[in-house]
Image (cartoon, rainbow, N blue to C red; front, side, top):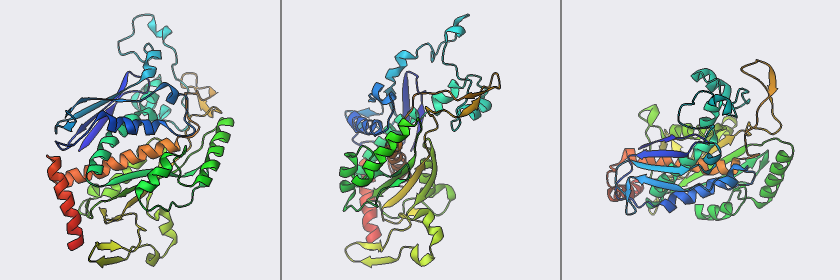
Length: 390
């Protein structure tokens, strides 16, 4: 199972093509639109979210609410395109038109792909770089993740993301009886935080950053429950599921670190306080007393919840811009300003859910017979039983 995305931030639309999904799986436009709406919410979002009301158009691969087994194409219209038709037009420029095209970017912004991308591809107008490297691309990654989340939910596997930290304000570790309880609290939080006391302080920090013309980052956590043990592999490095999830998380715009379970805290503890002891009971089969390793051993799921966290740096587009150098004149300037958020951590937790869900769903589809969804579901149900009786 794989997907590609295409599109620019101010182009006509964003598109993803998904290949390898089983046939006969229920899927509707509403499944995708729900997740797209979640991505657009969150305290600290900028003006772009007031322009766009993201909705998916399924162009292929689904008939009468069921997947066909053929590639699924999904598009999301950029409503802001109407203001950018000349700047981002597809047709070649005619003589004299170049002077009409405004918003040429020759001043790379620190922390962005602008300068390095311009050097790599030879773009003298770095708008060619920033249009694609923009976090707007995560819109269709969330669309692909919505499809993956639907598959997982139908297999009895649930995914939830939430915010642990913003601007140095750390929430208490959530205590919840189930992911449903966690979702109920975080979906009603402007910053997707379980801890109401921390929520207020996070919002105050976002307000202060906006007032200062600055930005702040944070930490998000994704939890996956209901997996059988043995998803992934110890046989090859590129089949280890935790490695794939780590790669997917770090690919999210502005993410700079990933950890599972106790994460970097493991470096400060003895082995007896890190590894999860194994127990067995007739009703549940093999279990772990703890989940310090975050649901993985040897690159494979243990049957315990996957717990993965990602660190998001502050967004580098600032209204208090940093110094840069004009690539044409080589003179110092303050970096140009594009529309931006003062904090996108709440939205990033939704993107993190999507990429984690995709990697888990992809690993399942690749590991088991998956031409037909009904057969895949039977296999996963049997695999969960096998883990108890081994």
